[in-house]
Image (cartoon, rainbow, N blue to C red; front, side):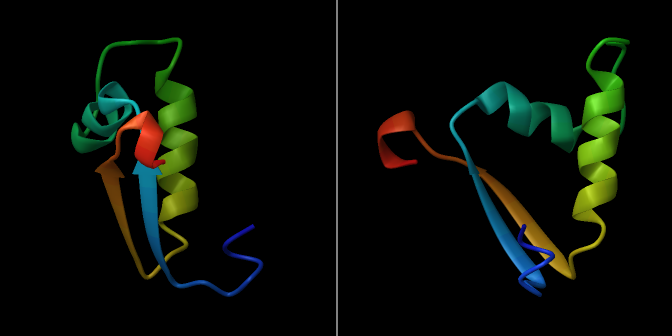
Length: 60
């Protein structure tokens, strides 16, 4: 949706710290979730810049 709106810089607020750690590592050994993380990384490459940050559920 952000790409369709021609947004080039993206801030992603996530309330799960584990998700942040998954994206901060180049690869990990979970065969179930690795393809999903790889797909998300590929989608994020379409943006000029992106920043993923942890935000508590109440603030998200």
